[in-house]
Structure formats: structure tokens, C-alpha cells
Length: 55
Figure: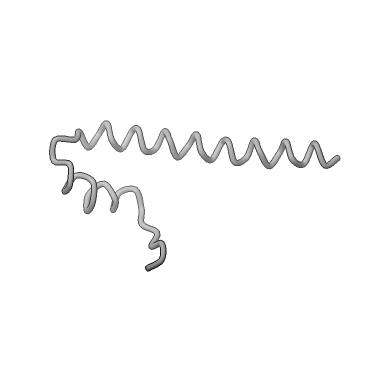
């Protein structure tokens, strides 16, 4: 079975909240979006530093 991409909204509604009913959905959404944003920033940073290093 391979990876099946889903949106954050689908994950929250269909998976996480269902399996973790005590979780605050608004806080979860904020944490996931923050983590995704941080990840994207690091990927861009790594690309730029590799480009600079390569000259």
C-alpha cells in the first residue's frame, strides 16, 4: 500500500478528530499549519544554501 496524499482539512476531519475526540480542532489546525510552514521554509533554505555553495 502506497502513500495517499490528503489535505490537512481531510486529515483533521476524517482521521485525527475521529480518533482523538478530546483534541481541540482549532489548536490542531494551527499546529499543523505552523509545522508545514516551517518545513517549507527549511526546504527553501536548504535549496538556497546548496545553490550558494555550488557557486
